[in-house]
Length: 97
Image 1 (cartoon, one colour):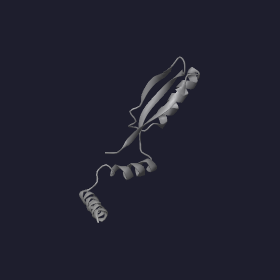
Image 2: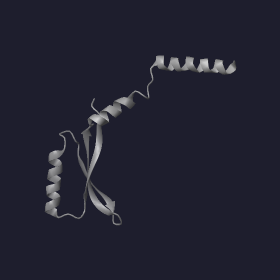
Image 3: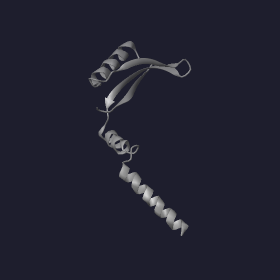
Image 4: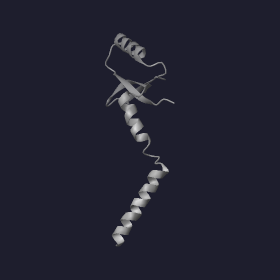
């Protein structure tokens, strides 16, 4: 199973209709085939409205490297845990002496 991340592209509300259509076509043409893109209207009257396009993309090489580094952190193997226990008991013995 490949890991993917959700990414967003926002289009502010001050564009012409032709500009909006051109921008949407440009975004659609650059999306990956399995992007599962969705379009939403976000914001409010106070902070402004924008079109937000959410889509899935594959991890970059840097993101995949970081993901691989931290994916093993949550599941230590038994030998590592046993080593920690023996180190703790050694420290406790030294303190008691």
